[in-house]
Structure formats: structure tokens, C-alpha cells
Length: 306
Image 1 (cartoon, rainbow, N blue to C red):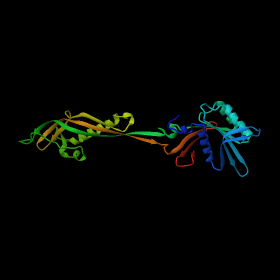
Image 2 (image 1 turned 90 degrees about the vertical axis):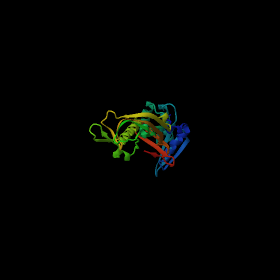
Image 3 (image 1 turned 135 degrees about the vertical axis):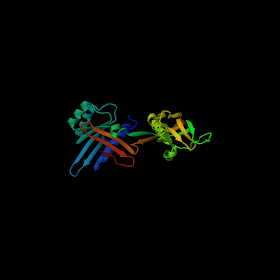
């Protein structure tokens, strides 16, 4: 049984009969009765699951319906019983609704007798619209910071009394990435090149992009936060633009080391496209190629056939 469907609501025969009865009642201008016992023209008692009577000004049209919530497909014998009831009770039409299908002989016989055969089943994923009734999205929000940034560098003093240590105050911001004081220069020609903060920002973006592509669903999709701490290094030793010009020194930056602290925030979003429906079922004719979707919103009394 489809756990995401609605057929479980009609597991017993009585609920299935009531479901079919309610479908016919929505046609309007009809009298629909369930579990009707009548005496036929030969004096025998006959029971009908659902009887539909349509009265016009000068005529009456009667349809007898059998509802079979069985484990096995409907056989020709069952169609023959309904055909006999139609004749003996003076009805005009007959139909059988089931949840398990029909044998080939039953279908051929029903076509000859003008009896409709309908299979009632849950909608497939394709009929719901892929991926199906339930849509599960796993959302990852990735964040990362660089901490303990250290430079492997060689400083060439530009003043007589340079400081014993050099400090560089920078942050990964758009303003810093545009600060010309943080631009790197060519060690060969002295030309101005890329910005030091811009290089760190590019590395930050590349790491987040790699995390997004390489980390899949975590812990069966449960909401959680995964923390990643890892040492990282940017090697500039083989590049041309690696000289940083400060007021007191020209600094040749060979490597930038830092600790990456990243967080992956995982949240699960579940969408049930049938949450506001009392039912959504496929009614499939085995006599013709006709198929109808019967659905009803929980807030409405009427269902919708299309």
C-alpha cells in the first residue's frame, strides 16, 4: 500500500462503498442509495452496493454499482452477476469499482454487456508531478571565517629605524579589497597588481563553493550544524605579485597561513502537496481509455473530477 497515498482511508469495504456513493452524489439531480436490497421481477432478493436513480421529466435512469475492495482481480463471474441484476431489476446501466483490477475475461464480457469497469488507485509520482506528492528539500547555509592569519614574509626596511615588528590590520570586506595600500606589487617590474584582501576574499569564496559542492545530506537530513576547522595556506612564493608596500618596509609575502572555521547549517523543508486534501485518487476505466482524478479539499464538501 502506498504510504503517501489516500487508499488506506478506504481499507474496508464499507468505507470504499461510501466513497463511491459520495462521488455519484456530486452529480446533482440524482438519488444515491447504498446497500439496497430489492426483489427482482422473478421474486428473488438482490443486493446492490450503490444504486443511482436519475429522474427526468418523462423517464427514470437507474445505474447499479458494485464496489469490490478485494485482494484479487475481478473475474468474469462477478460481471455476469451484475449483468443479471441489471436485467432482473430493470436497471439501465451497471458499473464495478475495484482496487485490484480485472481479469481479461471480465473486461471482454463487460464491454459486450455495456458495463463500466473502474480501477481506483493512488496517484503515481508522475501523476502528482515529479518528484511526487511529497517534496523534501535539504537546505545548506555555509559560512566560514579565517582566524589566526599569519604571513611568511621577508621585510626590506625603507626607513633608518624600522619597527621591530610589523602589524597589518585588514578584514575581508569590500572596502579593504579596494584599499590601494593593500595592493601587491610585482617583484620584477614594480607594477601594481592584485589586492591582498582580494586574494583572501577569493580564497574564502572558493572554499565556500567547494563546501557547497562536496558536502551532501548530513545525518539523514536532520536539522544540524556541522563545524569544520582546518589549517589552510595560500602559497604566493611562485607568483610575480607578492610585494606589499608599507610605510616602513617593503614586505615580500611568500605564504599566508590561517585556520579555517566553517559551519554548515542544515535545515530540512518538507512540502506535502496533499496536506489540504481529503483525497486525491485516480479512477481508471478498463473498458475505455478514460481516466479521471478525483480529489477533494478537506475544507470543501464537494470533490473535483477532471
